[in-house]
Length: 171
Image (cartoon, rainbow, N blue to C red; front, side, top):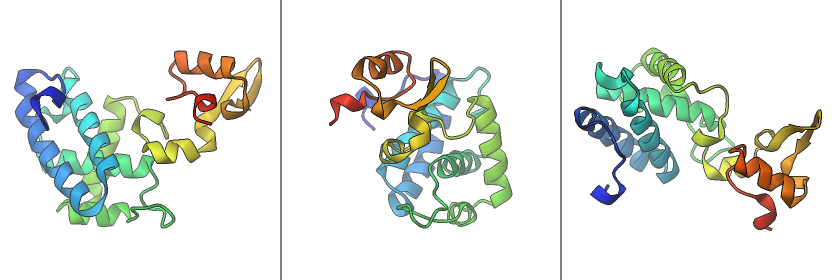
């Protein structure tokens, strides 16, 4: 990662970030894909910016496993219909960590970053576009699919950060 692309972090956390990302990048390069690597870097940076940061202590490999475990759960990594696909236990094994470690770190990360369910920020873009639940919002007391709403409604949802892009602009 070039300096221009490096995330802003407290100086004391840069070595932790680099150590964690070295592991996630290697695993993503060998077993996952660049989408997972990008999300893992973003999640590692978010964790390093927390005060106090949960990743300040413990093994970088364990935190890396927790990050990819959580991202794998959010992005349906265990579903054989997705690409890439592998069980979370297999992911942890390939990372040299136990499944209980990966799961425990994933829970700690979800708590630290207040991640509940399948949040769009942590989804692979290709999965987000296909997930009907990500586009459902309540409008005037009714749950609607924003992809089928007028552009003005989509714009309001985009402005509020509910959706990553305006579907009407992509068709």
